[in-house]
Length: 251
Image (cartoon, rainbow, N blue to C red; front, top):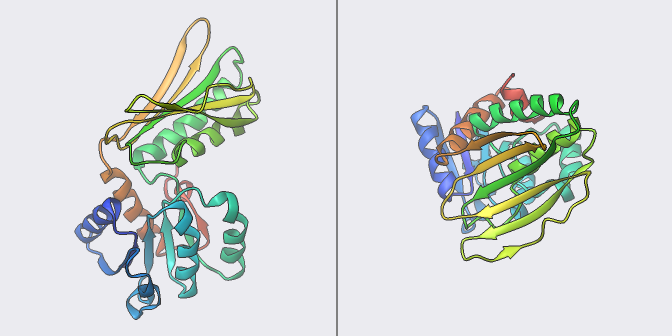
């Protein structure tokens, strides 16, 4: 398979390494300094482009890739609020393909399945209140994480007593804390921690007067995200439309 990389930071380098190990070819690498390569024959020859950039750039990157009918696998978050409907329209009307996930880790996909199942059970037990905490490296400026938001949406969808999630505090290594923990009973609070070089920890707790039930996923490195992105690209090569991890992993 011919792969183009959009974004060549730490994730891009790791994706490249795993893709090559799995026998794929990297035909184009696009970063901030060579945006003109979106219109190159090398980019147009790609079967799939894997995109890991930032929320402000992702939507534009999709449009540039779709212009050449290159399928896209993307882990960028934050673009859906403003551009979700337009991207869905383009995919539907122009027969483009986007595989999007807030997290490509196989472990997170399993964790998500457990999260949904547990939320369904806990809907029967209103004495348990649910909260979430996510921890990432200090270079991650957005909070809460895209993965935390996805997990929270899954809970809200299944828990009648929660109508939405709410951003709580964000605690940094230097001791300062942004935000506050004020929230209404029907809001699922998501607190964040930005610490050292942590790849990602997501913890969900159901607490009652009697006891507490906690599930957690902790990434040891970015390698699991990179492998999942390459697996998604392999899946996307032979599939079309708007795809996500629920299409790739059948739990």
